[in-house]
Image (cartoon, rainbow, N blue to C red; front, side, top):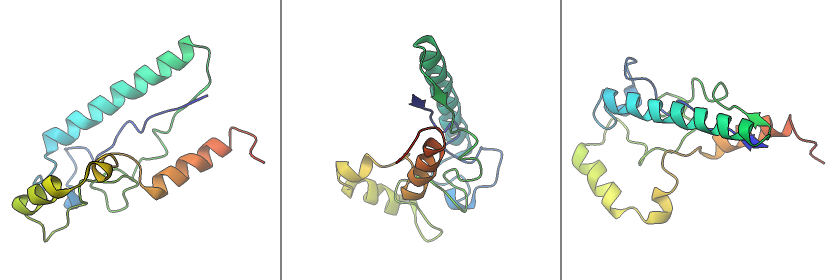
Length: 127
């Protein structure tokens, strides 16, 4: 069984994303690019699972409304900038962040992983 990839990681560029500081940290065009890459990955995973004869579970709908830059994100952002941050502050944060923290960026947070586990539990017999 293959668990899919959240196709849309970020609020689309056409949406006013307050938690992305009005195009400051993740620009509208970057948000759209990230979502296109998520779509490609979701499609590739689905097709590869099908070709291998493996069951595929999409999580695309699960994460709708919980993208990065939304008010209720189920993803770990880059320092999760808030309205008091500046570009210089974010740059400093990124440079000082250890690789172990950077590996979490753009992946589900605890809530996101819990929601995926709940979805998966509906497909698998869990003791």
